[in-house]
Amino acid sequence: MKRVTLTPALLLVLCALAPLQAAPASPAAASTVGPALPPARLIPLEGDVKESLFDTVKRRTEEALRQGARCIVYRIKSDGGEVGAALDLSNYIFKLPADVRAIAYVDVKAYSAAALIALACDDLYMTPGSSIGDCEPITLGGEGPITIGEKIQSPLRERFRAFARENHYPELLAQAMVTKDLEVIEVLKRDDNSKILMLRGDYDDLDKKDRANYKKLRTVNHAGRLLTLGDDEALELGFSRGTFASSEELLRELGYQPQEVAISAVTRTDTVMDFFDDYAPIFLAAAVFFAYLEFKSPGVGLFAVLSLLSLVAFFVDKLYTGQANYLEVLIFLLGVALLAIEVFLIPGFGVTGILGLVLIFSSLVLAMQDFNLPQGQIQLDITLNNIKVLCGSILGATLLFCALLAVLSKTRLSFLPGLVHQVSAPPASGSELAPEERSWVGRRGVTLCALRPAGKADFSGTVLQVVAKDGWIDSSADVEVCEQEGARIAVRLRSPAPHPSSDPSPSSSTTT
Image 1 (cartoon, rainbow, N blue to C red):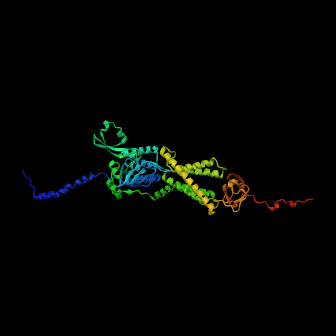
Image 2: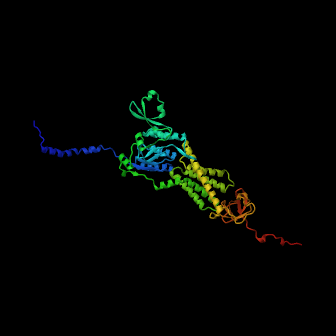
């Protein structure tokens, strides 16, 4: 039997061939690399939680889904906001398709409504020094913030509990973010040395035998306090999956290159619509105020245009955010039509005018919410708040109009013709009475605009709202008051004076 001896030369040859023999293993190694990650998108979610924010986040999310994104990181930085908008947005995120991974990245703070949105996501990450929690529903009263009752807290707790259960967050701590009466403790189970959370009341109700299996470690949340967690506590208690200094670090941890992840920022249109949404009550007040001015001014002019533009700004914002649709616009226009019929065609003020005002008021309230008839306490509270906002806008416009009248009457300013009644000469007896309280029958004046059939006429320096008795009357026509019923003054064209030659004269008669 021959023996093979390894000479130094043979060893060198084997060393040289070793890399060539190992080379074919590289494809196999490459085949062990996992599949490519699905496309991701970063969506900032910042500012007050309200319907306009829900609309823009929803629109940006759906755009990302259409472009193939299956991992969406919501960078949350918010102090909270409206309960209704928070429920809408959190439910929307919670119900995203099963193949879409929603990630909440808390940047600095996620309080109140923002905490609910964060827990609706599949995973939650935080920045160093950030915090989450404090979701007790409150409303502003005369003496400051007031906690809303159990009718609101109960559905909120249910949502917190459902999101926590589905996304594997501590349910008891999630509920403690809503209600301050929950005292949560951490205990050690002696049989398996595992740590669990319990309500203090449940722990106290255990009998001696069962309690011997538990050892109380600490109180996580005291009764009378709302739970708010910092990033380190959230990580320790199982809320947070990790702490990262920036969204770029988080994306790298998730396996993405930050430069390859698009950011769906807020557009300029969203910013403009957000401005309109913030000042919607002011637009309503402006519409009412300019309508007052137009009613007290002759003709149809600048104030009517300003009132219309204010209403257009209000409805455009509500249509853009999805709170209103064309039904509310049609109801509003129908109300305006009925009110115009009552003012211009039907004497007095009756059922038609009242129905028109009801339709206008209802359309404005419905335009401020994304539902019609309220269902449940939360939607009922939203409707009542919208009614308060609308009444406040009308009251504010009325007070401003009265203040303007007072200023103009004292300063004798005349840059708003017809707004303050001016009389060129001392009137006769009874002139101190309001126009509807004195007799104007037989007075002659000139129309300041076409009466079709209503409009304004000037009676020796006093401008009155009048109605044409028979047909329409052109502008600058000589008219005479023929009827007066309270504030309703009816006029007709003044008959021309008879020719002198046609008048019989006593001196022309003959005597015998």
